[in-house]
Image 1 (cartoon, rainbow, N blue to C red):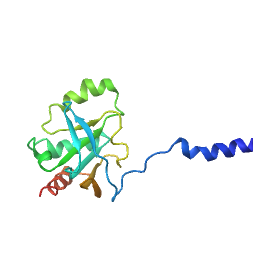
Image 2: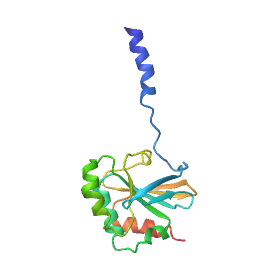
Image 3: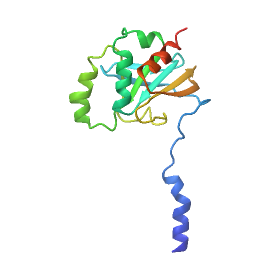
Image 4: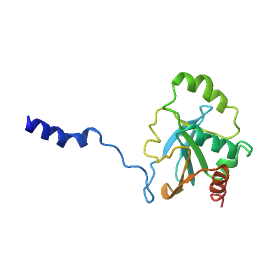
Length: 158
């Protein structure tokens, strides 16, 4: 019995191997993600700012920051806003959330199964700001206000 218990203890870390969260100095792997209209975009070497959230409070910050901006505001800044909607029931996502998002001028990229945003750090009610230089993470910050989001995007303009 002791041997079985010891074997289980030794195998336990292998059962739940999970990637470490993204950190400054890491290189982000390029990925493609679709927006609320089903149009894809590539996070690649030209992306300077990846903004990310997992909850509705943070999404409201993004709406307050970007709803009145022109459609090209984020693309011109080489910035992208993505949300993880994997925790939302599919019926709610399709019937209510996406139709509402389709009315927004700015693009919202949706990770429907948490496959591309799994390693991104997130804090409740905050938007994660991943500053990039040719996919290398140069800074990780969190925005708690719409003004902070706007300042982060403005900081990416050449």
